[in-house]
Amino acid sequence: MSEMPLETLIEATLFSSGKSMSVTELSEALGYDADEMLDCLGSLQATLRRRKGGALQLAEVGNRWALEVKPAIASLLPKDTKTDMPPKLLKAAALIAYHQPMPQSRLVELLGQKAYDYVRELAQLGMVDRRKDGNTRRLSTTRRFSEAFGCPHTDRKKVRAWFREQVQASGLLDELGANDVLREESEQDGTVQASLPVSEEE
Picture (tube, rainbow, N blue to C red):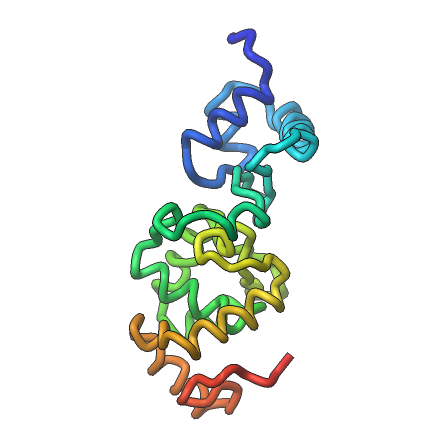
């Protein structure tokens, strides 16, 4: 077994993987038991928080762990350094951001059964938090989502408001082919108008 501190191994593993990992995945990859891994994840999180001038933080998102750029720094990054998300996931991510906290069952109604795969991939990328809520899951964006989209906020409500402003200004959802989805939803329950103005709801 390597003499390298486990904290260092975890940091290097998460950095090189470029994605979020569960405790089980880290344990299997590094050969340590889950309890020891969880303790060291907590220690690494505290270490990064104390590190002067550090750009990264360790975040737990939906029972998965990921290294990410601190929000205050992410807003200063050039756009060409942001995460490039596959188009199939971008549509799902945009709808989640626009409606969060969004029931996963609602996303499935809008996008079909493939929505389950999209949510799983988004969670693995650390973009979406999926919390159990009765018979479904409640979906919301994460700090990594804010980093990827250049959003200066991490609070869920502020991200939602910011994203809706971006939609209104750029027609993003129309470009993604998601405008029709929102129009259909509008006709069903009146929560979103077809012209995509920023909603007045909370």
